[in-house]
Length: 562
Image 1 (cartoon, rainbow, N blue to C red):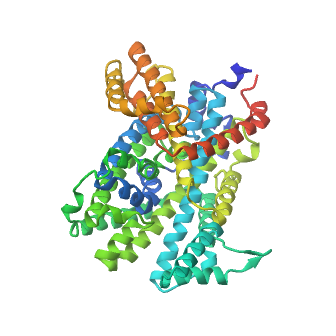
Image 2 (image 1 turned 135 degrees about the vertical axis):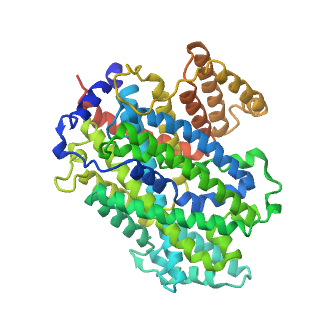
Image 3 (image 1 turned 60 degrees about the vertical axis):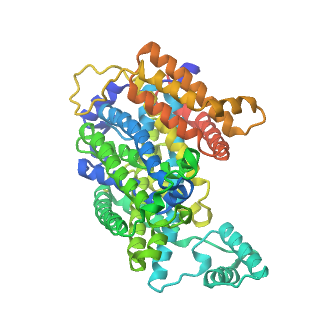
């Protein structure tokens, strides 16, 4: 059984079928429409990356790390850069849909591919619940700017509403004078409809936008591409405008001290900052809709990552230069900062935030169905998930299921904790993609590839970096070992990382492994262990559920089953 759990797909067979216009034996006439070029892929990458992160989570990260949060964007960009290069290598050699799921299938085997596919649901589908809730908040702010007020019970989940009502009533009872915001919270609670004896609160805007986006992705990739391109052009123009305008209000004194809470404070923003980068890999799911995937996918991923990094660093410096970093722990830092300096631009920022999060929803709602389509083709999911619409040429059933999976929970779920879970799912995929590159068979040079991951011998560099890291972390290592059994899961994860780094460094020294994928494995693994331990517990529960589904259905229905 163990051998069959790790059965692999053949890269050579995949490439041959792609060149012949086949997808797992199905004629291209029933396949996906090839309309995407490098410009479209770059725009889709930017559409996926520049969203809730730059308009929301960047504030939380800046309040912990201060101006030095700009360094964390650089560190995270470099980390994502290693992964992007590894994704690019795979994309140039495995030109079919499926992203990290497919890449794991050809290198690690079926069970690991399933685990990755299941983890990617956290990145795309579950992550989109957070984006939908953020979109609803921005949209409601925009409506209020123009004098339209939706009922309080129709824009928030019940848990958030109850917590806000309780905090507000306690504050009023303690003698605090109720302001307009507090009064609106009380009114929303008192005026909420009652269903079966419970106050009814639903995030209706979030539900509606997911439904509209799902309808767009159902209709076709060409329409989705055009919509994404227009939204990206608009939000880049706005962001550049905001950066230039913000420079006139920057006070350099706010940048000192640059690292007020030390490097530890900077690292507290890992999850929030990494969440801001999630999405550049989503374009790899559109391989079968690319005109030339082996050439354009690598370029699209790398171009979008570079552009977004530059924008993020500039935004971080402008925000921390306009106000004191301690003021930025708010849900809408850009709108908050400009409300103090240039109130007239608030509406522009709100419009841009709505457009930005809409584009993220669009790209992620495109990505998830195509992963399910690939898993269905391999027999790991029912055949319905792999069906392509005869007219629209989209995986229509998977698109409908994804829409329901995101839209319904967005009605009543809180977004907290979902961000961390999304980051874990994504980083987990990044680690395995980077490791998978090391397991790819050597390229015989016969394929006409425009991208090839350069080989840099890591024999000396990796062990040297490992020693520097261990020396710098000696205090934490000692404390974690002394407190073993007493410390929480967080320090256990850190010690596990040290063991992993030791093994990887020794193997690199002995086998002269390639530097870029090794750095991808080590850097993404480190970001993983910095995510709160409670999120890991939920992640393990999610993985357990996924493995149950695999052994109950996928294992016995796999097309690779002997």
